[in-house]
Every structure is written in structure tokens, then in C-alpha cells.
Image (cartoon, rainbow, N blue to C red; front, side):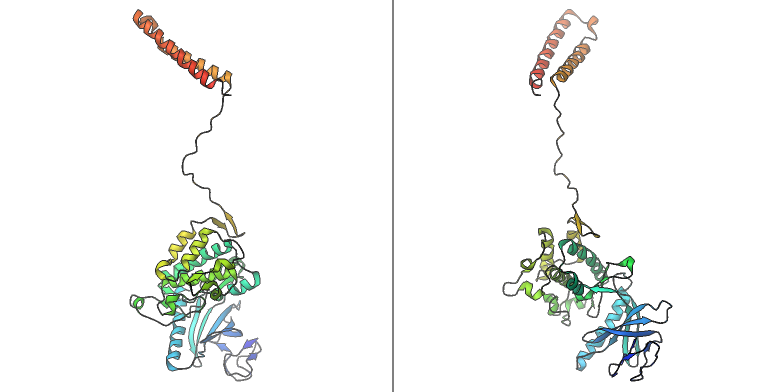
Length: 381
């Protein structure tokens, strides 16, 4: 199947072999190599299509993103063009990361702008939630650990994603060697942070259910992505709209009331700090969240089970005392007496009478001490 990219085409479906649309005559191949197969999505200023690269023998799948703004007005159109251009630049900068789609091409054809990017074969997390049900604690901890590292990379490149939500996170199904890996997509709302832009009010952008309060006011921060990620987590844990999980009147999150599986205090504390509505009370960087997350019990990713680390004792464990029998104690006491008396009498022939008297007194004292030891330990068994 081949799909015509002309938005006005009355019948965009065509066969694979055609080079021009049978209905409107438009070219069916972009850059003489990319063929649209079917539409897979539409946003406020673009349409996306599953496509095939016919310039390669394996005919790999890819994604065509066509600039197609729905909104009217000169300023709105100018902003849409800016965002579309920015997405191409962001992907060009970030797409070498294995968990961000790679930019394949960016060009204009027939007066329309196109962006070609790597196709990620899998379900997004909204689809996964609908198919498999809510996440448990182990799955959330594993998901956070993986996505925070992607954010860490983006933020190091001075890029704020600004639209983190389940629909923009895909779990790979193919290729098999990468199955289960999550990928952050849709950088159409992303923003590069500069010293100047940090102090300027920009465009309010993002999905209302997931966007941070300061981002609504046009003041997106790195911490804004952390907030949106926190909201994504509680949605995955509850399958409820984030609007249902927040009490506006009391400025408090109620997500615990909707949990279907237990989340322990330590992970709850991390999520609450990610969800702080005041930026100053929130984690400021992905590094900070990862530090706290890595202090929790580690995971076995394949099974979702916890492996509790062996705790380090706070103080040394006292040695085990093994009781001896009376006969063994008696034997040890006699050996001690022999050692002491023999040592003192080694020079017997060279000592004077007074010294012998002194030695006898010492031997008597040794006998008394050994008798006390015999009484103390000989009857304990």
C-alpha cells in the first residue's frame, strides 16, 4: 500500500508500485526514496505516517512527519514553523542516543516541510497501560531509572523536553535485542535553554494533565520535566487522570487513595518530591532523583522482583561463646598452673632462701586464683 501525502487528495490510497497518485497526480515518493504506507497520527501542526525507505535493500520502516498546521493566524503559524524546525534540530543533536529517535532527513518538497525519523516499533505507555493494567512498584522503579538517564542526557545538552507523558514514551518490541527498552519521542515542544532564555517568559506549551505549574506560565525549567515524569508515574500506578489525583482546593496530591498495589514509603517520598508544585521544593536535576532512587533496594529487571541489599551492621556482632565441659575446664586450669609454676622455677638453683620463700607465696596466690576460676566456670555447663 502507498499513501498520498497531499492533504487535499480525495482518495489517498494507492498500490505499492505507483510513483504518482492515481487520484490527484502528486508524487508518492519523497526524495525519490521514502514511501508513506499509512497515517499513524496527527497533532496540532503536523501529520505522521509510517513509511518505507526504498533506497535500501532491506526496505526499513521509518516515520514521515509532515508540517501541517491546523491553527490559523500569522503569529500562530510562525510559532508552528519555529517548533517544527526546532524539532528537527533537537533530533539532529540528540538522536544519536539509542533511546531517542534518530533524525534521518529534513527537507522541503512541493512547498511542504518534512521530517524523516527512525521508526520505533512498540506500544507507547498509554497503550501499554490499557493493555496490561497498572504498574507495580518494581516496574515504576525500573521505568524511572531508565527514563531519568535519558533526561540526564537531554538536560546535559541544555534541552528541556516540555511534553513528557505516557503517549510520548514507547517501549520497543523490535528488534528483539532491544525489546523492552523505552524510547522518549516527540521533541516538537522541546526547548534549548540559554542564559538569556532562563530569565524570559516563553510560550505556554505541553499537555495540561502533565505540565508543571511554572511551565504553564511560560517559565519551563529542567525541573519541569521531572514534574511531568512524576505525574506520568502516578498515572501508570493508578490508571486515573492526573486531574483526578490532585486536590486543587488544598494543593495536595491524592494519588495514594487510588493505588491498586502497594508503594513503600521510600519510593512514595521520591514521587512526592518530584510532584512538588513549587519548583524550589522539587528535585532540580535528574541526577538528584537518580541518587535517591539508587539508594532504594535494587531490581531484577527481567522479573520485576526486588533484591534486598545485605545491610551493613551498625556495630560489630559479639563473638559466639562456646560453653566447655567441667572436665575440659579442669584440664585447661591445670595446664595454666603448670605454665606459671614452671616459668617461675626455671632458675630455682640460682635463687636464695628468701627468694624461694617469695616464690612459694606467689605459687600459693596462683593456686587461689585458679581455684576461683574453677568455681566460677566449672559449674556453668
